[in-house]
Length: 254
Ligand code: PAF
Image (cartoon, rainbow, N blue to C red; front, side, top):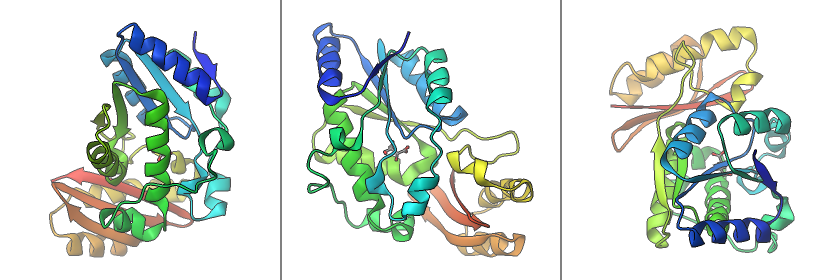
């Protein structure tokens, strides 16, 4: 049976109790609208820890476009079903004022990586992500926190923030989970029309097809995608494209 905690002091008490019992605590931060990609994070957290916490919070500070924030699917009942079936112990389901008593006067800013790629397309996005993740890690104080490599830039920024601020939590990266045809699982996929959905897996197929970003950009354009970027970072090829109204991101190892 999963317990839902709706405020910070309750969560902090439960977490303190977990530490007192010397139990390993796994944490999966989410914005809800859970899909198979999230489920793989929950399963891994369940396997590697004694207790598991999931947060459900659609974080407004990481959106520069109010319409985008409005459109984010809210599916609490279905999320709870998945969470229960993964054997999660506790859900943190806070309100804005619980997490932002300061109304976002204080924030975490990174430069320059957070201004590139996703940060270039969405101003202030990673300030919002890093700030809410730091708040959540300070409240939950987990042994390990799990992030999907689908949002590879987010994972790298969180990993580096944890190192920069000497956080005790281990930041764990989990591989991208894909549909059978290669499309990376995403809460945005529900917004694709059937025709767009048929085209979408071509994004991943083309991204895996070479090491020269310029050539990949051209191939994507020829196939009908509106290309935001294709760039290489560390050992990965990262891309963002638009099909109609939907923006998709993906990345593959090279
Ligand atoms: O990846 C997400 O769902 C969000 O960016 C996160 C990490 C839960 C912060 O709001």
